[in-house]
Length: 98
Image 1 (spheres, one colour):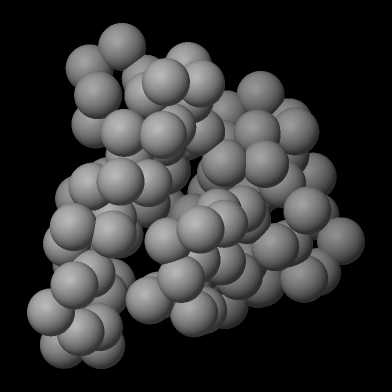
Image 2 (image 1 turned 180 degrees about the horizontal axis):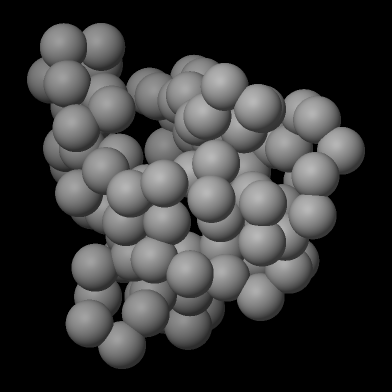
C-alpha cells in the first residue's frame, strides 16, 4: 500500500498490498506541506514520517479490494503495533516519507 502525495493531494496506490506501507512524495515539498496535502489522512508527523489515520485508509479502499483485504489489513496493523508504529490511540500508522 502506497500513499502518493502530490500538489493535488493524496491517492492510494496498490490498496490490496498490505505487505508494504509508505508515503511517496512526488513533488518536492517540505514536511509541513506534506501534512497539509495529506489533509484528513494525516494525524501529524515529524518531517521524515507521518501518522496516517487507519479510518482514512479504510475509506480510500472501499470498493477497490477483495474479500481478504480486511484480514490482510488487520495483519498489517498488528505487525505495525509489534514494531511500535501505531500511535498511542491505535488509530494511526506511522509511515516513512519516500
